[in-house]
Image 1 (tube, one colour):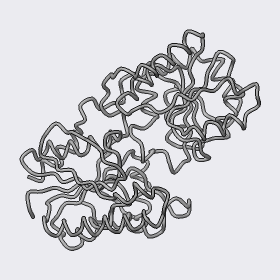
Image 2: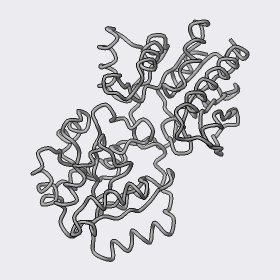
Image 3: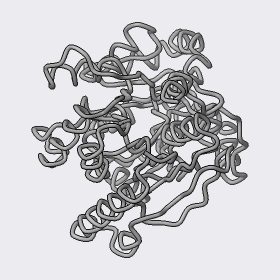
Image 4: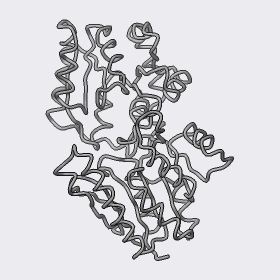
Length: 378
């Protein structure tokens, strides 16, 4: 094996604090060895790390021109697998760190061929074909990678226990790295965003935030119910959604409720934590198999609680319901009567939420458990 290390991912690393931190930890563990990142992404990005030992390769330029084409995406994934596998055979890296089921094929076959190599898999989410959110082939490939991996990184203990049951294994070599807030620095908001927040405050409103797409798995119908029940002194603000999504939501509401909602727009990742510090409460719904929010880190749960923000979540998500039942920093629906309870008891719930401030963050983008694991390989 050579003194090289590969990272396989498909993400905008600028906005994915989890992946950034895992790569940075690998870089810090082997400061005198080359770290090659192979990123399947549709755009050119500029990304910097503290150490100069990282070499970035962007793959997948066709996706940029045909972003909605499944055929092009499939061809891009196949091309990515061939290109990365070819480079794996040439460079024979000591370790391969993988971050998404869409880029597993090349690392899987490399590990089969070279068992002495070290495969580290970041299991942000384990989907299941019965939920119609992952092709059966990819699911089986992911299970195969977990079986072969020298180390699996889980986002929580529940996920780790579920995988053990699926694989009928007593033990899986693993680390738990929660989707806490990564790089909890305070970065000032863009002037236009800042002015909009200030105007809402000057008008005497509190801010109830929803971040991310409006879809069934993120409780679209529940959101409409909350909008209708929210007292007049609350504005429901949305970030990270397309204008069409917002307009469709607006049209689905009765005229009297439309004035309650505002679309703030997109917030850059480095300003996201600062933005959350400006809000009073949050709406947070996750389909039970989508909690880890695999395409976006940090997780909104920890953005909220790390900033003392109470939230309304969904009862049928085990992690959200367990967190609220333990800390009393929000309410769960159903039952829908809890929406009224949340607003009428907001002060008490907020006091509980404030007890959690700054307990769920990684300040330096360095994950020490993973760092010590890589040290042990030297």
